[in-house]
Structure formats: structure tokens, C-alpha cells
Amino acid sequence: MSELSFARIHWHLPDWLRFSPIIWLFALSVGALSWYWLPEGGHDWRNFFLLAGRNWWPDPWGGLGAFPYPPWASLLISPLAALPARVATVLTNTTAVLMLTLVIRRFDGPEWVVLPVLISPPGFWLFSNGQLDWLVWWGLLMFNGLDILLLTIKPQVAIGVVFRAVAKSSGD
Image 1 (tube, rainbow, N blue to C red):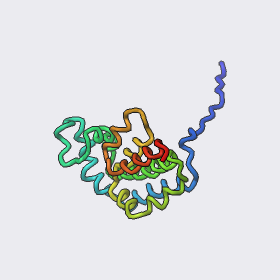
Image 2: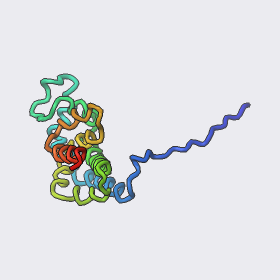
Image 3: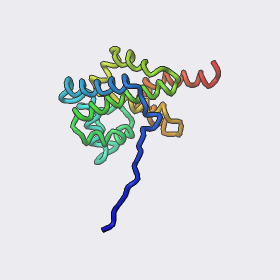
């Protein structure tokens, strides 16, 4: 009988996913609180995003109803729409914390800034509704053509950062 030997596998988080412990604690706390206080999922997630994500495949241009976002937003959230609204809201809110931290880092800000931003009234609104801002923040991390598609999902979120990036690139 021959013996099998396996080399030890060393797996490490990529550097861009290395957050400080306070950020991980905050993200997990947001997820746990979302699970506890939003048993039916966030309001907008439950009433708009879930339906748009589920209706995109059978009728991408006509089944969106009152969904005020471009059709590719429905395509992007369709994997989450396969989950119960409560689980999707937890994942959305937790991802929002991590994505905003990445954006703050990208624009040379300290990670801890995510805490006062997301415990403010707009942060509460974002979490209680299960908003899609994390998709826009994801777009702010890219500069490959997909960024425009993601930024158009919620231009009111992206416009301030875009102006800042243009001003920074022009040397002002």
C-alpha cells in the first residue's frame, strides 16, 4: 500500500482584505444586528431589490416594475435575490461596511472613518433598508470600464467621490 503525502498548504488573505480587527468586529456586528432587528430583511431589499433580482431573468426589461435602477443592477443582485430577504440584507449590510472601508483606504483615508460614517443617520438608513451602495463603492475601486456601469446605479452616492478624484488628479 502506497502512502500519500501532501505538502502543507499555506493560505493567506490578500493584502487588500486585511482589515483591522475593529473593522471586522464592526462588520460582523452590523451583520448580527441586521439579522436580529430586520427579520424580514431591509425595507428596500424586501420590496424592490429582491423582486427586481428575481424578475430579471424571465423579463429583464419589463419585469422591473418600479425599480428605479438600471437593468444591470438587477443582474448583479440576482444571486443575492435567490436567498431569503433576511440573509440577503445581512450580506448586503456586512459587505457595505467592508466596501466602504476599501474605498476609504483607496482614497488614502484611515480605516476608522468608516465607523462615524456608518453610525450616522445615513448609515442607519442604509442598513435598515438594505441599500445597494456597496455596488457603487465597488465601482469606485475599479477603473476598467465597469466602474461607469456601477457608478450609474446610484449616481448621487458616487458624484462626490468622483469630483474629489478629478480634483486630486488635476493637482488641486
